[in-house]
Length: 400
Image (cartoon, rainbow, N blue to C red):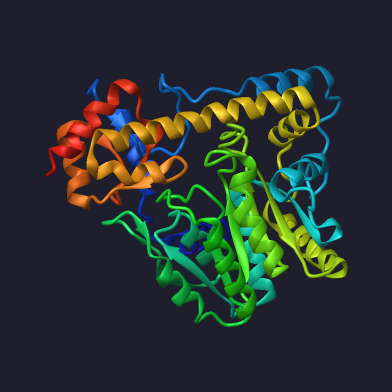
């Protein structure tokens, strides 16, 4: 009895030092939207693809791949810490092109793009604990917590002016010119989240040269390939950077471009300067993932592999992805034509844009019009349907 009391008191003291953590703003937004009884409410906050009817459909190719797995898969045994190697290899030519860097490219399947980012951050911390990571402001809200959890020092810099809706590329170059050898630059491969403002080919080339000359390692978050200008076009900047610098990390996600949100399908690719170095990197990646999740989940990766190993399924997937891209372009064009304030959205790419709204503006839109978005003013343009576009634009106009 005495021992039980000691154990109970010790556990209480350990857990009792924890402090209440604030809720994730986006998750809180989701809950608030669901509990709002208004029938005319509009959700432009949640970052998932939606069609003209507001649905997030399962790809035809995914359905067929799942049917085949159901009929043909013979085991649910572990595949190993690397995950589905067929999945990992099948994505290489889509991401990196025909080159694919041969034996200089290592990596493995991860638990979504978020898992890839976390392992990349831990790899950097293990290799260079004093490395600073240069992160543009704004960026995906989950980037800072991931980097902080790995113990890395972040250096922020402005690269986008929300008021003018334009890249401030000179500030980016000025910031990175102060980076030290061994530092890391976190870059969005395409369809920047949350601004939609991407670099053009010339800017990518200049960034790549600067990283090479400063000895800075690129970490590229590549979560939206195919939703900007197309699969090949969206990979252009990434390939320029890796070809120029010769080293880099790529965190890849299949959530958006395969519609596998629930499956948490991602991969981390590491490009090393030599095949020998790539083997060392791979051993470290296996060590890190073993301590994180041991073995990754298989079902989503197997779906992607089945699709990419079958020419007909690949063609159908590409067709569906092109339809998604077309809807994004169409919605951006309709918004740009509806109000001069929204005109810049036509030249941006992907699902997200950040509007020049204050937190007070966002709160007012929610209270008076039932429009839900983060306090930053970031919107998912695919949260709008043809019938909700006009009410949304009218609500924005009411703020002026």
